[in-house]
Length: 143
Image (spheres, rainbow, N blue to C red):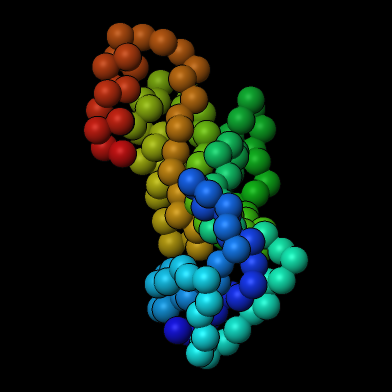
């Protein structure tokens, strides 16, 4: 193991337990009552251990209510990572004649190569037309 986190209280999606975590190549490779032999060991005695979090509502590098946000993808994602967040979900607002897919494409381009975190988008539906309604299932299918 490259890293062993020992003696912590592990919090998963389904349970809370006393366990050690073994990390290999940046991924959790083992969870067990006791793991020894890591290249690096962190003693988490008295601490909760969580997997990385998801920030589910941000407004990064875009126009919102006529004002430009000051946060860019690189600085925001570094800050998020230092706080234990691995995924950022942004809420971009389409322009007057912009489609939902258009704003998702634009923001994907803004974040790509800058964000060190995973990212996703939930575009704001700021008007409701038949065309917008038809886009929603396509966006879901496209992830």
